[in-house]
Image (cartoon, rainbow, N blue to C red):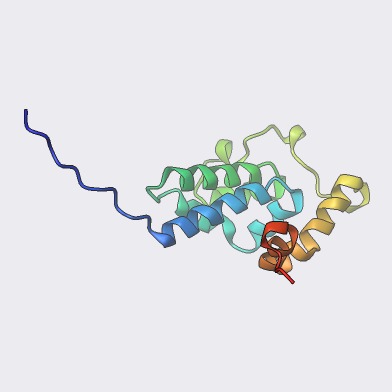
Length: 141
């Protein structure tokens, strides 16, 4: 038998890594009710739908998770059907009775904490948040 030489794996594509990370962030942010609405308002549905066509499996999983989370808000059902081209039964993954309600007068402590998180330092300046929160990354004096 003759040994076959195999090519080393190609180096990662930095734009692909960035897209994968961005879809991962959107997947996790869309667990928050307010983020579901904001991603829809800012045109994120179309971008996430385009990410489903990328070959990288983790990017597809992240985009699918974000779209699924967004479908739990009744305000996004039509948006998901129109922007992402999803049929109605996929654009709304849960029965209407299970979906979140966007009523400001019924905010509990969790909703208030979510608002503070979304309006806080993390979204306004993410790099400074991560650099200051991790003691390993703090500047030595």
